Structure formats: C-alpha cells, structure tokens
Image 1: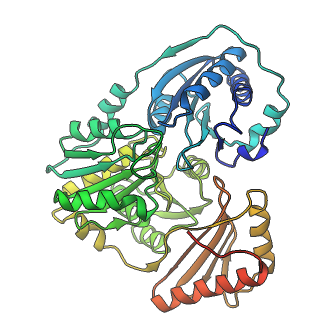
Image 2: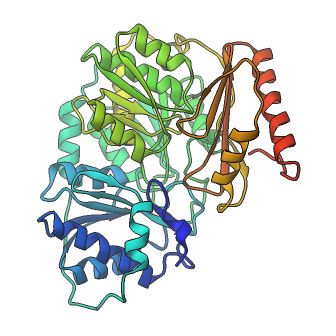
Length: 453
C-alpha cells in the first residue's frame, strides 16, 4: 500500500497502481466502522467523470457493506452534491470519488463523516492494519439528489435582469447540472464541454490554469456574453471570465462575495495563505474579521465551523458560502450567486471587477519535486532562508512580506510539487521579491531545476 495516497485533505493516487480493489475495500470498511461508532448505518457515495469511477465505487460499496453500512448511491454528480446530501439528507456521511484536478489516470476520495471533513492522514494506520475485507451481499440504494438541490438553489438565487452566460465544465462532473441550474434560474445559457468524459478531450478541467480558459474566453467574446464560468473536474472550484474575455483572479471573486455578504451579516471571512493582501484589507474596511488559514478545503471548512464565518475562499477557486447556504465549497452555487450580483449591478462584469484595487501578482506557480521530499524541503528552506527586514508567516509553508510585496512557498498536499505565489503594489517590488526567493532557492537547493509551471 502506498502511504502517500493518504493526504492532508483526502485520499488521492493513481487509479490502477495505488487505488486497487483491496485498498479501496479496506478504506470503505474502516470508514464504515467509524460510521457505526456514531450510531449511524448509511453513507452517500458519488463520483465524477473519471474512467476508473465505476470500479472504485464497486470496491468501496463492498467495503462499506462488509462493515454493516448501507451505500446510498448518488451516481455521477459534482462533489458539492455529495456534501449537500450530507447536510440535507438522511445521513451526515458521504464519500466523493474524484481525482479533482489531478491527471486523468488518478482518482481519490473526499470524505465527510458525521458532518466533518476527514483527513486521509488520520486513516492510514487503521487501513494499513486492516485484514482482508470479506465479501457480503450488496446493500445499496440509488438516490436522486438533483431535484432537491435545484429547488433550493432556485429559492436562494433571484436575478433582476437576464444575462447571457457561457459555462465550461471541461467534460467534468458539473456540466449537465450547471446547465440545468442556470437555465432554470432564467439565464440565457450556453454550455461548452458539458458532456462528462473522463478522457477530458478538450482541455484539463482546472480553471486555475490560464491555458484551460482559452476556449471559454473565445466563446464569451464570440457570443457577446455578459460573463463566463469554468468549473474543475468535480465542480467544487470556479473560475470567471468577464464580458471582455478577461480571466478574474479568485482574490477578486472572494472580494466581490465579501462585499455582497458583509452587507447581510457581519462576521469573519476565512482565506488561505495564497490570497492577495488586498483581501484582508477590504474585509477589515467593510467591518468583517479577516482570518488567514492554511490552504485546503479541509482546513477552510474547519475554520468556517470554528469561527462561524460568513464565507471562506481560496486562491485556487474553492469558495465556501456560509450565509443562507451550507459552508461547503460549491462552484455551481457560487457561480449562480456571482451571476446574480452582476445581474443586480448596472455595470458590466468587467466594470464590476475593475473597481477592485489592482496589484502586480503571479498566478500559482508550481515546481516539480519528490512527493517524499517536498515537506522536508520547505522546512529546510525555512531554516536556511535569508530575507532581511521581513515579516514571516509560517502557518502553511512560509509567507515572506517586505514592504508591500510578499512571496510564498509551501508544499502541495495534492501533488508532488512546491507551490509559490508573489504579489506587490509595483512591478519593481514584484521583481525584487521573486529574485530574493530565487536567490534563496539556488543557494539552499543548488541541484534543483527551477522550471516553474
């Protein structure tokens, strides 16, 4: 068993070499025993469009059934609908089979037990020590969750003027449901790459990467649309394109939602270490409480619960609305609320976004490293780095601030990569903070190839 599949947020690995039937059965059995210990006896299971979904689901059901837990099968749905089922259905337990934005041959499990996100790390020892799982008669029921979700979204989202919206699900799990939702809300909706296809034939479903937004940008301009939205493979991350065909930083999406929701209720807003320094400034200016947290849906959800936050957001496009919604990351609902905000405004989507302060920043930058070494490398960087006259934040990797500029390095919890981001109020300061990081990297890791992607 590959220990590295048990990650800080979830379980993730190659669908053939790592997530074999016996491993998945053991995971299901261990999770089932945990469910029984809470006095419950059922679990929701959903999956995205990946080609390995059916075999993993079959093994997972076997594991749950062997433990005495019934499977409530949602079928091919976005991750948020599994979360929605645990919030509104008959059991607060759910597992989503998804590889999220990983390569198409990967897959994984996002887990909620008793209404709390479960880290893969906390399961490793139990699964490793589990004996072979016995075969038992199947015990599952197929559940249709979409009608209830559609009904509640329509109750919460009201538009004042009809917009033309382009949706791009990248052949992931969100396409058909997002199209249904937006049409039902009264938007003029054009969907591209709507059909689920685990080969992802048009582009990889990761809206945080600019190259994956090119087709959506083209369609927004071609159709003279008001706004475009892109979803990741399992529908829990969103990207936005303005009417001018420009991509919008997730920082600005969180700012837009902050403005919207702090008018309704004051309180904390949670954001991750990769977010712009302009975000906490805006939160504080509007009377909210800005709280920086470690990256990862697992960490943001726990912080939202702890602080009863109004909403949370990550630079990657995970956004968690917790006022008049349920506090989980839901790209479809978030896109609908963003579209409603634009519908209510007399300005275009481009004008709405351009009202926010502009900085010079990079997107998330990745550096390929060994999965076994990435956390050690960050600790070595922290112990040997040199940044004179700086302020340090070490809640997740290290974020170094010098004047208006800051830079971040952290280990990815989902991939064998180091993650970087840089921001400053001037182009010169941005260049300086990047060069300081590069100088430190070259000195501390002289054999490391600095090929960022």
